[in-house]
Length: 585
Image: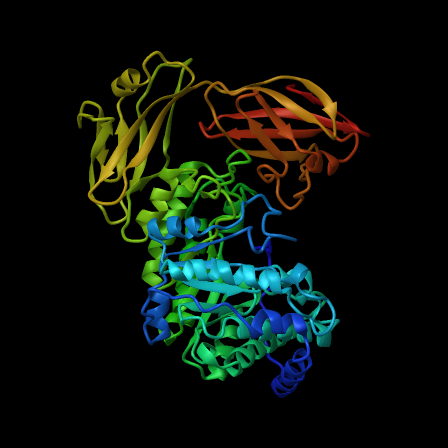
């Protein structure tokens, strides 16, 4: 994954397939004298013994790969396996992944630092051997494996428009060596041509032609390498792995022209962008975010699956959550609703999914899930639906009389079975009422549930349904947060904050003339953790150097902090050279 958030749809296709095949032959001849390649591919270790009996049809084989998991930020890390914070891969890691119900693993690999940058573009034999060791461990565990060319896409492949011949030669050399090394591996190993392909300084039509050229060359090289590669499943991406109509139509045309029944389409999905990173007011998994998801999976089905082309969703999640190293930009309940529906829509569309996991789901050091309850929602979505509600929090104000509070249930095809507090079932009529999908907690029940009325979560209820997981509802005592004046610099400025049980949702930033303030000047609602970030234990909100640096000097800015209780609090900041002043009035 690379944060490629906006790609323009493009159409058109150019000639050049014959030239590409001729260049492929020249590269193969040139590589024949490469000693490193010979060491890596000429005498490979014995192929792995897979426990799988792979179905003959591509559609059935890819269906058997559900669900999938990504070994992210590891062999794709730059420059080395442990450079991005994960420990070296072990066989025990795949034992764990397999035991947790996964049936396939995508193993992203960045070859750049391990491949010579000049002809014959030989891949280091030690690194190739390590990749093979990791692949073989996964295969030996009975997992399907997808092996690819990963961050090379933006490191040098993206230069193809202005350095065509060198990029083609290097790309072809890489796949010639990979194909030779793995030619005798079982069919449970799949090859993916390139991750999230992109091209600099090119028109839409040129991008289409270049990706078609790479996918076609990849196909010819692998098929021509013999052994198990003659029938191996090959995975081809759209531009950027984006699931737009135009880009999927382009890929569908390429697949159709190759006349090969063992091809798989791949795209990625990270949600509606404002929701995925919490910007532009995208705090909730609302109707807009839901439509973006359902439309994307409908397109995957209609363009590919309905035409007999299997789809491997090589990455999914959000662009910003979960990340245990930062405060949650996406509220937990909203994230759970998104993941629950994504699993369902993938099943309806017939799409096999692979969770992108760089570090925040599975702790690679302990081989334990960092958030078992979150993973339980993901795992449940593979097989069934779970009921949810409009929120997973009910806020009860401390300084006001307690009143009844209402949530909207989303049964998702299940039936509501009642509310529980631990092992105690709440009493319908006395503790809550249900009218259609409106669940109302009575004032009497909330008074009892909030106990001593201390700020924060007082108790957690469970809404249980006829199947799937229960929906947790936190009962929270709060008062509107209180902010205080402060001074600082553009390098370090924090707003003293008494949260008083509340939770920060988003921040608006505007100038006195109504213009948007901050680095995201196209919206008043700035991005969570990029412009501002809460620290609940320290009692503050940090404004980032990037946000403060984007402000105009001596131009007062009004910040409106929105909290999940519904409270809003105004604050004012002014930057003057390198100093920053913040006031509540």
